[in-house]
Amino acid sequence: MKLITAIIKPFRLDDVREALSATGVQGMTVTEVKGYGRQKGHTEIYRGAEYAVSFLPKIKIEIAVKSEMADAVIEAIASKAKTGQIGDGKIFVTPLEAVLRIRTGETDGDAL
Amino acid sequence: MTLDWKKLGAGLAIAVGATVAASAPAFAAAPKIDSGDTAWMLTSSALVLMMTIPGLALFYGGMVRKKNVLATLAQSFGATCIITVLWMIVGYSVAFTTNADSATNQFIGSFDQFMLGKMGLNSVNPLAATIPESVYMFFQMTFAIITPALIAGALADRMKFSAFMWFMSLWLLLVYCPIAHWVWGGGWLGAMGALDYAGGTVVHLNAGTAALVTCLVLGKRVGLGTENMAPHNLVLSVIGASLLWVGWFGFNAGSAVTANVNAGMAAAATQIATAAAALGWMFVEWIIAKKPSVLGMISGAVAGLVAITPASGFVDAQGALIIGFAAGIVCYFSAVWVKKWIGYDDALDAWGVHGVGGALGAMLTGALAKNSINSLGKGWIFDGNGHQMLIQFYDVAGTFVYCAIGTFIILKVIDLVIGLRVSREVEVEGLDINLHGETVHG
Image 1 (tube, chains in turn blue, green):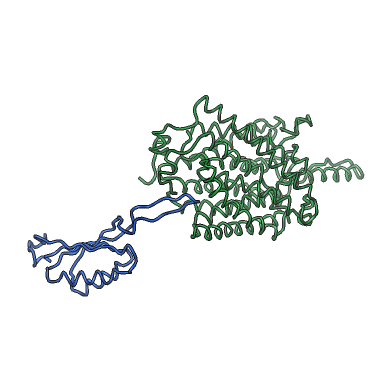
Image 2 (image 1 turned 90 degrees about the vertical axis):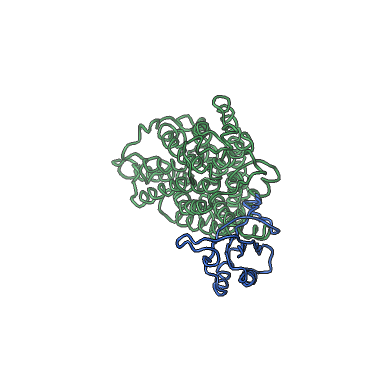
């Protein structure tokens, strides 16, 4: 099993979610986050006074999937989140040791 | 404003006097109160009060950081209250009554209306002969309120509230009241023929100059240039600026002190100049800084309102367009670039917008006043009266010098007695919680 964590531009979320549903992903967790990478921050100007805003708003998506689905999920996110502009985000893939569905007690693959 | 009425009133008195003398001496020359004028002036008074609370309070309140929002609102509100009472006690009398000694009257009025003791139901100020004195006193009170309150833009984020209240009180009595008397109450500037319809110098240059002196005396805010001091909520500022705009029709059109053709022309000029100034600031910022900011648009609108203030009853629509557009561009450079070059911390640009806009408007009034719009004004360009430019310059210089010196002395005295500025710790932590024991935004 894999935990796929993607940081994307907020306005790409709807497209990414649709593509993920199409690949058969059953659920995901989405969080509004702030951060910076190569895009750095941006500058706000008020009557000539410039302020650097270092952290930009992004969306973090977390999805747990069976290992064989990971490539399709990564491909779906990468293709839909891509604008070609700096700041498109990143996808992290980590091995997942165990999963438990709280309501039924199912574990691992059955719980996904 | 009362410039019109001083002269009109005098003319009226002579005319009425002549009629009475020629016919029957049975009737006294009692002025007739006009219900239309009274209705408009009651409306104008309320509109001008709305400019300060909530207009100016929100305009400034939105521009500060969230730790100082309530303190900034408290300044506008506190000033409104203390000035109302002081105006009642002695301010109105000093500014708008005539001193029996004509030499003294050049500089200051009388104390006849101490505690408004002689203001009866039917009394009338000769400066405004067709409305009750109660209404005239109230109308002028709203001007007296907003003028000191404007200064708060320069001292934002760092003055003690106690010092602020003392400052408002002393400044009203020692700076505003005399200057209002000079121009509108029968003093030397009005007599010289200075054209200031609604307060370009008396209100805006005056407040702006005080603002400049105040921010120099106080020093810069802690963290200026290193900390993020972005406005916490520009929506409040947009609402505030819009209320200022609407209220300004009471300010300018109300300065006709009557519901007549001059009031109509002043209202039209005000609307045109304000829009032109907002566009002027927007365009120049768009070109230089690449983006037309919302703060820029509303700042431009206020600059236009300021600059058209002295001119509103004297210029035609084309004159208003020129004054507005010029004000938007000039005030952009003064608030954004000149401040940066020179390095004073006029936090919310009370000098950059009100001082510079007021002086610009006063000078352009001399240039663009049209005798066909107002028989009391003869301008340079249309009427060939170049001398008016000199008079306008005296008006600007006289206001600037007296106000700067007076403000400096008042601030130094307050500083010596109770201190002007909050401690560094209070400033960093925020004025709301430390001065008022409250916070907004949790």
